Structures are given as C-alpha cells and as structure tokens.
Image (tube, rainbow, N blue to C red; front, side, top):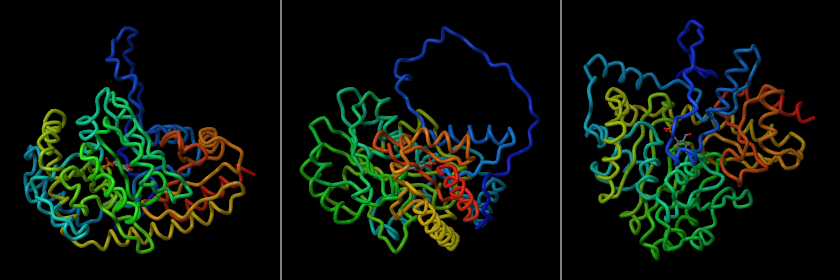
Length: 412
Ligand code: PLP
C-alpha cells in the first residue's frame, strides 16, 4: 500500500492562458439540456481554484481512496507496457481477465458466471451508462436510489425515461423498504437500480430486505435489475456483502456493476466490469464498440494481478478506512446540530445537518469558501439529500480531524 496523501503528484506545467473559442449560435441536441453532472468534480475544481489563490482547503469530498495503487499492480502495469501491450484488445476484454473476474465472483460472492457474460469497461461508470441507454427512452420508467450516485438520475433523464426514486431514509439505515419499492413498479418499469454498499450514505442492503425484494421481483419478469456493487469490499464490522448474483431466480435479468477503482485504489486507471445476462451482453458490447472500442490493454493486464495477486493491501486500506470511519462518526456527532449514523460500508459519512438550521447547498458553499473544507451537499445526490452533507473519509485522520474542527468552528 502506498503512502496516504491528499492530492496526487501532477506534472509541473507552465502557466499560460489560452483564448477560448466562443459562439452564440452552436445548435446542440435538445437532450443535452437534460444531462446532469457529478458535483464532486465541480467542487474539486472549485477547491483547486481556491488553493491556487493560496487558500488552505481540507478535501473531504473526494470519492477516491487516498492511497496509491498497491505496488504489485503498478509493477504488472509497467511490465505490460514493456511487454508490448500497446494495441486494442477484444472489445469485451482479455479472456484471462474475464476468467479472473469469474474466479473472483466465485470466491467473494459465491456465484457462478461465465466469462462470456463479463464485459470489461473503462471504469465503473460505463456499465451504468450502457444499461441505462439500453432500457431508457420516453415512456419507460427506471427506478434509482435517492439519495444516490447522481449519474443514475442524470442518465435516466437524459435517456428520456421517467426517473422514479427509491427513497432511502435515515430511519431505515439508508436501505430501502422492499414493499415500497415493489409498490412503485408499473408495466412501464424497465430497470431497477440498486447500490450496496451505497454512495453517498454508507448504507448497506441487508439480506432479509434483498430476499424480500427479489421474491417480489419474481412477479415482475419485465424488470431488469442493475446492482452497483463497486464498494463490495468496503464493508465494516464483519457485515456481509449481499450480491444480486446470489439470486438464481432473477439471474437472467440481473446486471452486476463492479470495478477496480475503489477496491484497489485505481480510480485513475479507469477499469471496471459488468456481468450481464447472456441475452444483454451483446448489446452492451455493441455500445462499447460504438463508444470506446475496448478498455486500456496494459491496465487490463495489471487488473489480472490485482485480482489474482496478494490481497493484503486491500485489507490494510480497509483497516485504515475503518479507523477513519470511527473518527469521522465521533467528531461529526460532537458538532452541535449535527448527527450522523454509523456508516456500514464504502468510505462516506452522511450526517444530518437539520439541527444547524442551514440548507445543505448553502452549508457546502459556506464551508468551502469560508472555512476551507470541501464536502458535498446532500442534494448533489438527489432531492432526498436535503438536510444532509456527504463527507468522504478517504483522507488521513489528521485531515479529517482538522476538517471537522473547522466545520465545528464555522457553525459556532
Ligand atoms: N458507482 C458508484 C456508486 C460510485 O460511487 C462511483 C464513483 O464514485 C462509480 C460507480 C464510478 O466508478 P468509476 O470511477 O470506476 O467509474
């Protein structure tokens, strides 16, 4: 495991200003007006701009492990480049990597899938992009967690489908109520998106609730399920990971999303995978061929090492996240007007800030501009996020303590 650091070393570039081409008459497709974004990237840019002005910012908004990629994986990537992995790979990814994914799924999820069901993609996001494009169109309905990863809602709206929220409440530990979810299914529902462990809340889906949901879904064979399990290895207190692949009765319409970004601190390498039902994988592969052709070749070779090589770095990172989780939970609850449930997975805390009398977005802005703390408004994750902020504990204990000291001072 590499050292913990807040940012990443960037090459030193000469500061220049470039003229920007502008036009008042660029006709864009109408659908571009409905495309949302991931605010984390915008806050990151604002925080960087403030730092460039000399301001000191504590970064508690980043959804990326602050560790460097384990050295055995870096070495495998370097070797792959030296060995000549410079060309396209098959669109669905290297067979050896898809086989390694199948082994990993058998080992960690106790589920059996075929390498032909695996589509290797550049990051976790393409799997959700392909699935939402595949099912979304005007007249269709897609259900998604709210608060949840913002790209779900953004892409659903962009596809023209109706975005139907699955409300995740603090009272239910930021999990869903299966009966309420099932009650929202209509003949137009095509896709149901789940995310466990969850961003932004750190909540997880318990087996009993997933069992109940799947039993209900057996009565709705027209609904495909996309389960985003990108944080499946970031679970605490011995919590069990419940995977959609463990349910044979819906296996022919379940899509799994996972990847290397969070587990192996590889967000910048851009690599992920989807496990698709046999009848859908060809459509997903076609979307891949129409967009990016294939994932980066050397990265795929490094990813084989990630899955088959030693896993102690993953355990070490998890222990560090766990320690920070406790610090963050304790310090947040010590701030008057703030209360935070203990996150069970991922590396985020989602404190309730209603006791401060402030609105989430205003507090995000104030904390960044006046207190020097970058975090995210709960509303960046959907309307149900009002009254909350998201703090990431993918930062050192010292930085978390300093950041929350500033929050406390600012609110006082
Ligand atoms: N899914 C969830 C729930 C996430 O939080 C993220 C990233 O933050 C992703 C998917 C995307 O992962 P990647 O960076 O590998 O595209």
